[in-house]
Length: 447
Picture 1: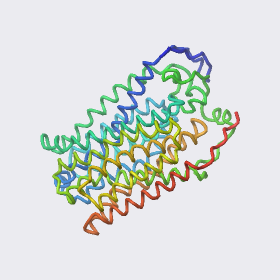
Picture 2: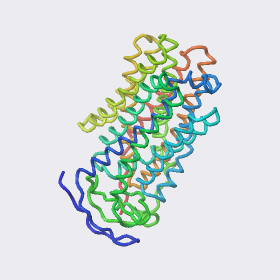
Picture 3: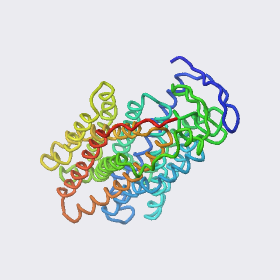
Picture 4: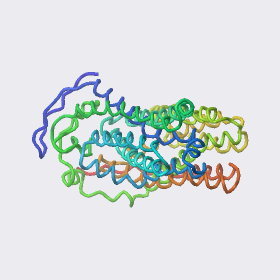
């Protein structure tokens, strides 16, 4: 890739110094996004394959152990203001470094002591990952303009790759070193990601407080500006944040919570995330109960649900880039998603087929929803607000999934009713997703 130079600009803290960069920096940032994503789901789903060992070790019931999957998703909802707070006061790169450090801390704390320690560590993990959920879509919109769909696909594929690693390997690790060390060992992957993001942060260009221009539209650290060309984005002039950015984008924006399309995104994201986290928490147990697999076998089998998400995460944006309607893609993904609960009800012996279909669907659907959100945000500042609101509310709904399925399973004595609950959530997801994909495009803001 040919190197480009960011032209000098001026912000409230002084001039922006030009610097030439090329494709190497873009590749480094993409690698950093991939490594970060590997740490945003794995610490949560790691408990599921060894939930019986964890419950026995902590002296709690298996149903009560569902809180280790529910708590992080609750934090995804309630901790999104923390992400907005950090993004206003630090660069996106620094925000990510902080979240990685806290994920590593929480992963270790969760494995140290009794139930109280485990809950504390889980809360810490959930709060840190909540920050990442909000920040990454903003980074993608800022630094990969025109390629958001593909990069969102890579990001989603990496989320699920992290889940595959932890789902498939945690139980064998627990057999070797015990469940506490098996869970704590995933902090090493967090440290690797932190090292790469430290290098990315070191490449940030000195300059004003804002990320350059409305193409960026989000805050950088005080006294710094982000080199837009480092990721291949068009060079733009620097501008301050806050009121100046609001004036530069046509005045105060309509609150995102008053927009119908945003609420449709909330419903679609909620249905998607409810189903994903509920099934991620209970698939190994469900397979053990219905097919007779042991913990290792159930963990490896349910990894197909995570592994095939890579196909959907990459395939869905490629189809849209080739001209396939977003609505057609969403219909296909919804049918694949529904195959899992229906298939497990009618033919549980073919569970790998149903999990593979749903894996493609959950990876692709999340990517499409994030891409739609980026398209419907008219500038970077609005993308910040939409990302925080949609994911906060959507994950609030999703947070009930693991515990609700555990309670319903215990009350009903089987898996039929829990799978019907998942089917209902998928119906909400598909209906809302198609509605927002059919909504009229928003007019650009006057400058």
